[in-house]
Image (cartoon, rainbow, N blue to C red; front, side):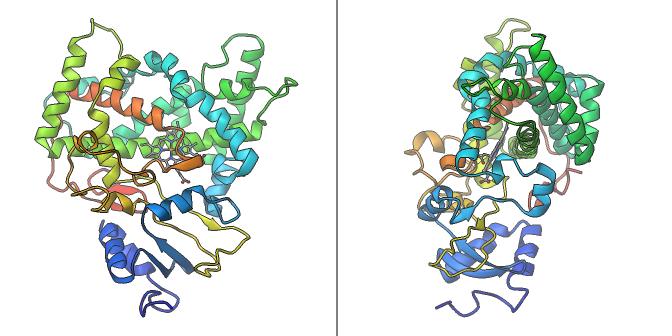
Length: 416
Ligand code: HEM
């Protein structure tokens, strides 16, 4: 039996109050209040659909490991139109395993290690966006989010297409706003790279596209179709661009707000910089030594940047007898006192001092068979960026208002 009020107003349900809370960046308080009133599992009506609210480690394990008949990972129709039917988020079973295996063969640490030097040449990226010019003691914070977007876009272009500068990359950035044209240019890239591979003008692990084109079945036929490569290059661009730029923006905001954390990070990064000869690049070993990633994890704990859409599969999920379950909140475990004591206090040593969090409780990168395959790439990208940032410029907030709202991704009120 449902507690009175748990479903909200007829038709509207709780949509307006949740939207209002999210826009005011009080979404978390809204969810806490719900847990307090109705417990960790409750039913509500959101955006015209009956919805289940689940909270806790067991709920996360269930959501992240159940089969696609219970919940499918399908994205909303608008997202499907943009990313195509063959993108990894839409797939399940053998197809999901095949595509994921191909992506992971390029994104796993052993593979990334070979490219770390190339990608870590971020100084050139900084120069491209005029960062080097800002060697003063002051960065205009209104520029942080767009700047991070430019930088992460450039890096992801290097990862997917192997292009590091030039008019073609600039054109891609403009086209990314218009997906149809972007997809056309992507198909051109796939054809060009196929020819380049045949003529041995490039090597198979040069970039993501050459890697995916080179993976073969036992009979030497291609493992992935062009459509699969195209759709997954789009999803990597979307998955690895907004998320990383949002993480970096939150991290820079944190450094500007927390002088002691900032000082510790500057000290760590300057020691690494001093140990290098002039022009020597960061290495994989440098990155693994950096405690700065713990601060990034704390930032992600507070601000997960991914919205998860799940849909009920053909087999109805009977416990709650919900006919059309649409959205599930999973990151509330980050704020659970019993799992992360004093959860909203940013303390980078927390991950060091405490026993590791129980599985499926820190879920900024999800968990289980669909856990983010870009985790290691996001880690090296973030660390390299912060290394160059704190050793070259000083971060200060230039305005008092550093608030943001969720739409549903974070939108920084001072950012655009
Ligand atoms: C701070 C950075 C990042 C965060 C917080 C993040 C977070 C996530 C999360 C929560 C998921 C699960 C989505 C779901 O449940 O449907 C996911 C999936 C995924 N992410 Fe990331 N991600 C980040 C960076 C990246 C990067 C850099 C790449 C690629 C280079 C990437 C590629 C993907 C892909 C392909 C999936 C789908 C995996 C699958 O369905 O098997 N992500 N990510």
